[in-house]
Image (cartoon, rainbow, N blue to C red; front, side, top):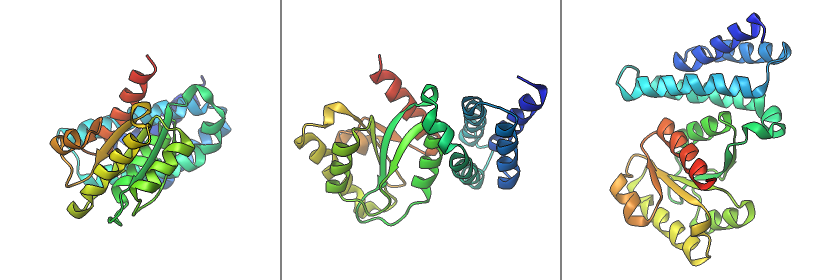
Length: 219
Protein backbone atom coordinates (compact mmCIF):
# COMPACT_ATOMS: atom_id res chain seq x y z
CA UNK A 1 0.00 0.00 0.00
CA UNK A 2 1.38 3.40 -0.99
CA UNK A 3 1.90 6.14 1.56
CA UNK A 4 -0.65 8.29 -0.30
CA UNK A 5 -3.37 5.66 0.05
CA UNK A 6 -2.45 5.06 3.69
CA UNK A 7 -2.81 8.80 4.39
CA UNK A 8 -6.17 8.91 2.61
CA UNK A 9 -7.44 5.95 4.63
CA UNK A 10 -6.40 7.77 7.81
CA UNK A 11 -8.30 10.83 6.55
CA UNK A 12 -11.39 8.71 5.84
CA UNK A 13 -11.24 7.20 9.31
CA UNK A 14 -10.99 10.69 10.81
CA UNK A 15 -13.98 11.80 8.71
CA UNK A 16 -16.09 9.45 10.82
CA UNK A 17 -14.36 9.65 14.19
CA UNK A 18 -14.59 13.46 14.00
CA UNK A 19 -17.45 13.97 11.50
CA UNK A 20 -17.64 17.50 10.12
CA UNK A 21 -16.95 17.65 6.37
CA UNK A 22 -19.10 15.60 3.99
CA UNK A 23 -17.44 16.88 0.82
CA UNK A 24 -13.96 16.35 2.24
CA UNK A 25 -14.80 12.74 3.07
CA UNK A 26 -16.20 12.12 -0.42
CA UNK A 27 -13.09 13.63 -2.00
CA UNK A 28 -10.82 11.39 0.08
CA UNK A 29 -12.77 8.27 -0.93
CA UNK A 30 -12.81 9.15 -4.63
CA UNK A 31 -9.09 9.94 -4.60
CA UNK A 32 -8.31 6.69 -2.78
CA UNK A 33 -10.31 4.69 -5.34
CA UNK A 34 -8.56 6.47 -8.21
CA UNK A 35 -5.19 5.59 -6.68
CA UNK A 36 -6.18 1.93 -6.53
CA UNK A 37 -7.40 1.49 -2.97
CA UNK A 38 -9.62 -1.55 -2.49
CA UNK A 39 -13.20 -1.01 -1.32
CA UNK A 40 -12.50 -3.35 1.60
CA UNK A 41 -9.70 -1.06 2.80
CA UNK A 42 -12.02 1.95 2.67
CA UNK A 43 -14.78 0.08 4.51
CA UNK A 44 -12.28 -0.95 7.18
CA UNK A 45 -11.26 2.70 7.65
CA UNK A 46 -14.91 3.70 7.90
CA UNK A 47 -15.55 0.94 10.42
CA UNK A 48 -12.69 2.13 12.62
CA UNK A 49 -13.96 5.70 12.46
CA UNK A 50 -17.55 4.69 13.18
CA UNK A 51 -16.40 2.58 16.13
CA UNK A 52 -14.49 5.57 17.47
CA UNK A 53 -17.38 8.04 17.17
CA UNK A 54 -19.70 5.43 18.67
CA UNK A 55 -17.41 4.97 21.65
CA UNK A 56 -17.13 8.75 22.07
CA UNK A 57 -20.92 9.04 21.99
CA UNK A 58 -21.33 6.27 24.55
CA UNK A 59 -18.84 8.04 26.85
CA UNK A 60 -20.72 11.32 26.45
CA UNK A 61 -17.79 12.93 24.64
CA UNK A 62 -19.75 13.96 21.54
CA UNK A 63 -23.28 15.04 20.72
CA UNK A 64 -26.06 13.26 18.83
CA UNK A 65 -25.53 15.78 16.04
CA UNK A 66 -22.09 14.27 15.39
CA UNK A 67 -23.59 10.79 15.21
CA UNK A 68 -26.15 12.09 12.72
CA UNK A 69 -23.38 13.75 10.70
CA UNK A 70 -21.49 10.43 10.65
CA UNK A 71 -24.66 8.86 9.29
CA UNK A 72 -24.95 11.50 6.57
CA UNK A 73 -21.32 10.95 5.57
CA UNK A 74 -21.86 7.19 5.61
CA UNK A 75 -24.84 7.59 3.26
CA UNK A 76 -22.78 9.60 0.77
CA UNK A 77 -19.81 7.24 0.94
CA UNK A 78 -22.03 4.16 0.68
CA UNK A 79 -23.45 5.55 -2.58
CA UNK A 80 -19.93 5.99 -3.96
CA UNK A 81 -18.83 2.53 -2.85
CA UNK A 82 -22.03 0.68 -3.76
CA UNK A 83 -20.79 -0.71 -7.11
CA UNK A 84 -17.57 -1.85 -5.44
CA UNK A 85 -19.39 -3.29 -2.42
CA UNK A 86 -21.75 -5.25 -4.65
CA UNK A 87 -18.88 -6.85 -6.55
CA UNK A 88 -16.59 -7.51 -3.61
CA UNK A 89 -17.83 -10.69 -1.94
CA UNK A 90 -15.12 -10.61 0.71
CA UNK A 91 -16.77 -7.63 2.43
CA UNK A 92 -20.35 -8.91 2.20
CA UNK A 93 -21.41 -8.98 5.82
CA UNK A 94 -24.99 -10.23 5.45
CA UNK A 95 -28.44 -9.09 4.34
CA UNK A 96 -30.83 -6.89 6.33
CA UNK A 97 -34.45 -5.96 5.63
CA UNK A 98 -35.20 -2.74 7.48
CA UNK A 99 -38.05 -0.28 7.86
CA UNK A 100 -40.00 2.05 10.14
CA UNK A 101 -43.15 0.24 11.25
CA UNK A 102 -46.72 1.08 10.24
CA UNK A 103 -48.12 4.13 11.99
CA UNK A 104 -44.78 5.94 12.12
CA UNK A 105 -43.46 8.32 9.46
CA UNK A 106 -40.08 9.10 11.03
CA UNK A 107 -36.97 7.91 9.22
CA UNK A 108 -33.89 9.82 10.44
CA UNK A 109 -32.74 7.10 12.83
CA UNK A 110 -33.51 4.36 10.33
CA UNK A 111 -31.62 6.16 7.59
CA UNK A 112 -28.54 6.43 9.77
CA UNK A 113 -28.67 2.69 10.48
CA UNK A 114 -29.14 1.92 6.76
CA UNK A 115 -26.16 4.07 5.83
CA UNK A 116 -23.93 2.53 8.46
CA UNK A 117 -24.98 -1.01 7.60
CA UNK A 118 -24.28 -0.38 3.92
CA UNK A 119 -20.89 1.13 4.68
CA UNK A 120 -20.03 -1.98 6.70
CA UNK A 121 -20.72 -4.25 3.73
CA UNK A 122 -24.28 -5.32 4.55
CA UNK A 123 -26.79 -5.68 1.72
CA UNK A 124 -29.68 -3.53 2.95
CA UNK A 125 -33.26 -3.61 1.70
CA UNK A 126 -34.87 -0.40 2.97
CA UNK A 127 -38.67 -0.69 3.00
CA UNK A 128 -39.04 2.95 4.04
CA UNK A 129 -41.60 4.27 6.52
CA UNK A 130 -45.11 3.21 7.59
CA UNK A 131 -44.28 -0.44 6.83
CA UNK A 132 -46.94 -2.98 7.77
CA UNK A 133 -46.31 -6.39 9.28
CA UNK A 134 -47.51 -7.89 6.01
CA UNK A 135 -44.93 -5.90 4.03
CA UNK A 136 -42.12 -7.02 6.34
CA UNK A 137 -43.31 -10.62 5.90
CA UNK A 138 -43.44 -10.32 2.11
CA UNK A 139 -39.92 -8.85 2.01
CA UNK A 140 -38.62 -11.59 4.32
CA UNK A 141 -40.04 -14.27 2.02
CA UNK A 142 -38.62 -12.62 -1.09
CA UNK A 143 -35.21 -11.50 0.16
CA UNK A 144 -34.41 -14.27 2.66
CA UNK A 145 -32.44 -11.88 4.90
CA UNK A 146 -30.24 -12.71 7.83
CA UNK A 147 -31.90 -9.95 9.84
CA UNK A 148 -35.18 -8.02 9.94
CA UNK A 149 -34.70 -4.65 11.63
CA UNK A 150 -37.63 -2.50 12.77
CA UNK A 151 -37.61 1.08 14.00
CA UNK A 152 -40.21 3.42 15.47
CA UNK A 153 -40.33 6.76 17.24
CA UNK A 154 -43.98 6.75 18.32
CA UNK A 155 -45.41 4.66 21.15
CA UNK A 156 -48.61 4.05 19.17
CA UNK A 157 -46.59 2.14 16.57
CA UNK A 158 -45.04 -0.33 19.00
CA UNK A 159 -47.73 -2.96 18.52
CA UNK A 160 -46.83 -3.26 14.84
CA UNK A 161 -43.44 -4.61 15.90
CA UNK A 162 -45.22 -7.33 17.87
CA UNK A 163 -47.52 -8.08 14.90
CA UNK A 164 -44.56 -8.37 12.55
CA UNK A 165 -42.81 -10.93 14.72
CA UNK A 166 -46.07 -12.86 15.07
CA UNK A 167 -46.50 -12.87 11.27
CA UNK A 168 -42.95 -14.12 10.78
CA UNK A 169 -43.57 -16.86 13.33
CA UNK A 170 -46.88 -17.91 11.75
CA UNK A 171 -45.18 -18.15 8.35
CA UNK A 172 -42.43 -20.37 9.73
CA UNK A 173 -39.71 -17.79 9.07
CA UNK A 174 -38.91 -16.72 12.61
CA UNK A 175 -36.27 -19.40 13.18
CA UNK A 176 -34.60 -18.59 9.86
CA UNK A 177 -33.67 -15.00 10.70
CA UNK A 178 -32.88 -12.61 13.53
CA UNK A 179 -34.97 -9.60 14.56
CA UNK A 180 -33.57 -6.32 15.86
CA UNK A 181 -35.82 -3.52 17.15
CA UNK A 182 -35.00 0.05 18.13
CA UNK A 183 -36.30 3.57 18.54
CA UNK A 184 -37.12 6.03 21.30
CA UNK A 185 -40.08 4.16 22.92
CA UNK A 186 -38.44 0.73 22.60
CA UNK A 187 -36.65 -0.86 25.55
CA UNK A 188 -34.71 -4.08 26.14
CA UNK A 189 -37.66 -5.33 28.18
CA UNK A 190 -40.12 -4.65 25.36
CA UNK A 191 -37.83 -6.32 22.83
CA UNK A 192 -37.71 -9.44 25.01
CA UNK A 193 -41.47 -9.34 25.58
CA UNK A 194 -42.31 -9.39 21.86
CA UNK A 195 -39.72 -12.05 21.05
CA UNK A 196 -37.08 -9.94 19.28
CA UNK A 197 -33.51 -11.19 19.32
CA UNK A 198 -31.97 -7.85 20.19
CA UNK A 199 -32.57 -4.19 21.01
CA UNK A 200 -30.41 -1.49 19.44
CA UNK A 201 -30.16 1.60 21.61
CA UNK A 202 -28.73 3.68 18.77
CA UNK A 203 -27.34 3.29 15.26
CA UNK A 204 -23.86 2.33 16.39
CA UNK A 205 -25.16 -0.38 18.70
CA UNK A 206 -27.61 -1.66 16.07
CA UNK A 207 -24.81 -2.14 13.55
CA UNK A 208 -22.58 -3.81 16.12
CA UNK A 209 -25.40 -6.19 17.07
CA UNK A 210 -26.13 -6.97 13.41
CA UNK A 211 -22.49 -7.95 12.88
CA UNK A 212 -22.53 -10.15 15.99
CA UNK A 213 -25.81 -11.87 15.02
CA UNK A 214 -24.62 -12.68 11.51
CA UNK A 215 -21.30 -14.01 12.81
CA UNK A 216 -23.20 -16.12 15.34
CA UNK A 217 -25.43 -17.58 12.61
CA UNK A 218 -22.44 -18.49 10.46
CA UNK A 219 -20.83 -20.63 13.17
